[in-house]
Image (tube, rainbow, N blue to C red; front, side, top):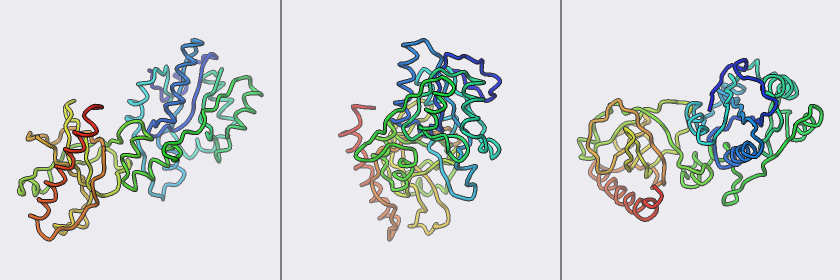
Length: 315
């Protein structure tokens, strides 16, 4: 898979199947598009090209709003690499680019620069200035310029429409188990282990403090989670707390810290990947550190039961 950030580096090929979208999260509805592209490639020998955008258009069009992404562009590219694409074109989304009309984008970029035999997009896809390039307009462009259009229908999971915005809303509620069903994988964050206060070790429950690699990325709702941890390509399980450690009166300092089960190694400044399996409870304020330790021990037992009962066969 070739990753291109300059449109002039793409060789024009009229036998190209193209899809366009942010693909934030590369969730199961995105995966349906990618599967269809691969099927068409095997059937016709066409080149497959995915056009994505970075930064996310919402970050550029609404800079004063708090908007969080599901995947950084690096994570997105890594996930896309599993789908046998030939080219991923990463468009630098700017205010100037946002003013390109749907027809200009279709004619000048998709047809003029990439080459286009068929476009495969989601049922509610929209592109171009003011999102005017809806499926109906895309079909009109197809008839006008001579390319096919295929729309992938809506997917529902437990009556939830699968979309990046819906997954963000679910994660903000802390329902990481439902989010994983819409994603087709566990939601994850990448980070670096940094030095914390050392309070966990003092209590006999050492934790790794996580500094996320990207502050643009959505962190699930504050609370306690069962997680899978990857360090140096090895997998472990743990109990993660996201919040303000109210028992110690640290309301102004939000932290993400994980107690890794059956683990006692020095990992400061190492890269760490956290995958969210299940939410255990809300963050709570305890009357004493001892009461907190007792609750953490209960959390660990709950985590072990979950892992043994539900996840060992798929991990």
